Image: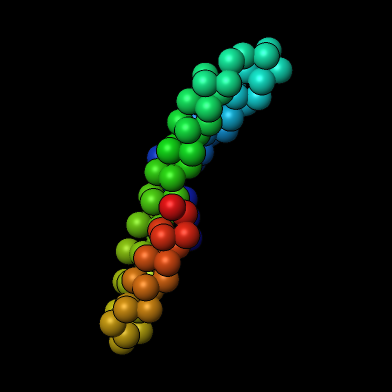
Length: 86
């Protein structure tokens, strides 16, 4: 599977946010600010997971249909991945 620029950029943004949190910890910033930023990192990663699963689902279902299958297994696997990320 190829990952598009949107997903790569989102992950780079998450990486930058996480480095920012590390800097906040090293600077001794207050706990509430650190937790707020960590929550933002988690939300950003959740969005990246959703994008990756959604794109993979479309690709897998298309392949299944081309192979004569319904794609049900691919859909169930994607649902499982989404549930695992929550």
